[in-house]
Image 1 (cartoon, rainbow, N blue to C red):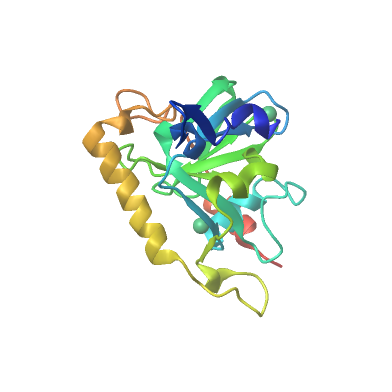
Image 2 (image 1 turned 135 degrees about the horizontal axis):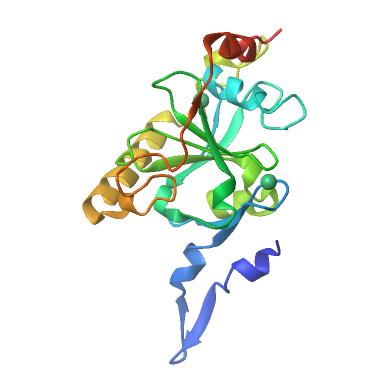
Length: 221
Ligand SMILES: [Zn+2]
Ligand SMILES: [Zn+2]
């Protein structure tokens, strides 16, 4: 998708004075599954987090899609953008949304079943309104421009290989998650999620993987 289309000019002239347009800080970032059946956009208004998670659960989720899916980097990290669920607007292909869990109480891990593209992770409680979008459904060309180039690295102890990335950015990441959740609670915006029904249930029944399936996905050798 052409970035120009989704990004209005940074300035416009009004009464001879230059104003920074509000939209300039709220780009529309394209969201697509690999085959294009699922498409939409993400408003990237602040706050948001851009991070890499190396935890064994995110690694297992990445491996769920096979070795060629390109979800994990070579140290097992998953690049994630955390935003309010209300910022995500899926315009087409909502019926292709599928959901899995690594355990009965684990995160809801959403993906497009048409072509097995990971979409994002949420908690099962819709009031905790953050979604961690997986880079595979985002636009690599504009990702840094829209969500910042400095990423936090978290759960680095579980990274693959002897030289672990240094953990950093965790405190500010948690702070921004709290800010998103609190703001959405106060404004009632947490109800504007396409991932949960009005009754607060996931829109798709999650498939819980068996412990054998998870053990296989967590094997790194
Ligand atoms: Zn697809
Ligand atoms: Zn993780």
